[in-house]
Amino acid sequence: MQTAANLMPIPGHIDPVPVPRSFVPRSDGRIDLLGLSLADLRMALETSQLEEKQAKLRAKQLWHWIYNRGATEFSAMTDISKTMHPWLEQRFVISRPNVVEAQVSTDGTRKWLLRSDDAQDYEMVFIPDADRGTLCVSSQVGCTLNCTFCHTGTMRLVRNLTPAEIVGQVMLARDSLGEWPSQPEGRMLTNIVMMGMGEPLYNFENVRDALKLVMDGAGLALSRRRITLSTSGVVPMMARAGAEIGVNLAVSLHAVTKEVRDEIVPLNRKYGIEELLQACADYPGTNNARRITFEYVMLKDKNDSDDDARELVRLLRKYELPAKVNLIPFNPWPGAQYECSTPERIKSFSSIVFGAGISAPVRTPRGRDIDAACGQLKTASEKKSRAQIDREAAADADAAFV
Image (cartoon, rainbow, N blue to C red; front, side):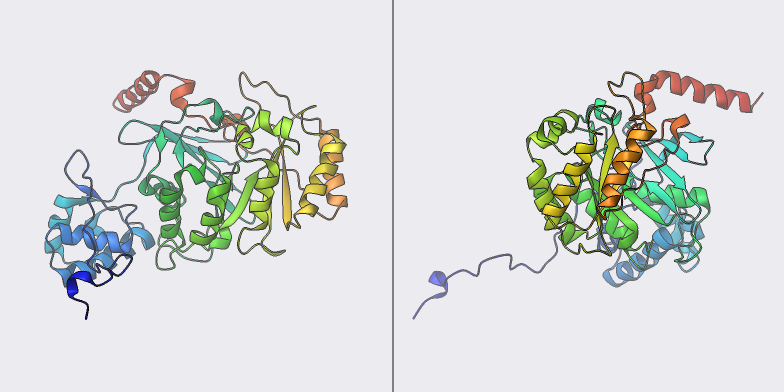
């Protein structure tokens, strides 16, 4: 007979007791509730010595007010007793990104330069259309991919954005558009694309956690069919993204030969075109009603020939990919080494792909006059010095009192 000492141990995690999270307070000692899941909200309250049943109830109430009503002040939470408001205010805060600069294009596109508490800058863009409004959300400060046609790619990667900084972009856009409380109909902000600064799959956990908040039906309630994650081809993370997030996939392809893609998307040297397209074919949930979008920037005499178009068709057919190809006229920026393909060349390329039964619309450039178009995002801290921005802000404040 075996004794307890020599019994075979049960494999895996057997401790059902949740481990308390370490909540990092801000400089003022308070914990920011933005970006926390319902479970984390409850844990934050319990960590602050609120009784367990109270914490469970208050967490649900806070969740509703933060993500459904857009509240930033506890005093607005009418179903929480007024006597508790000071207790919450002493310990917690519901933040928004700090807006350094907001610009509006002649075509209605809006761009915000945002600054984190540790003085890092990043950008988000809202693109209104007749039947939809799309928010382009950043996942990193800077980028590590060095795509040669992309202005953001000329920046160094500073750090990943947190779930609060990612979902905060959506919250701020909702604030600006006056779209609280959250409702499924009549929204201006209908779609989200993870196509801002950075590579989302190199910040996977934070992007996943933020998008779960966005998709939660009791909160921001944006359908996963309305969210697109764009990757330059981080192949090992694509299957995990499909399984754990399940949103639409867009792939920055931009070339159909190893030589050209190695040059303009250096990640291709690590994960080649064939490996990338196989990962696309394996992406869960893909069908004709839910196609993968391939982004293709049109660069003069680089990737825009009729042969390139025919090779693109061949590759998509080889992997039997339900696909849409977005043809993007190159958006110039100072110092860029490329030119945009001519309208005639773009039309010819599009016609070949369309002729093969694959949708290949030409994306209309939006927000070019405020550097908000695809590939143009680069923090203003690199366009002009932070000291200059601070001087301009101080001058604006002084002018308000004159």
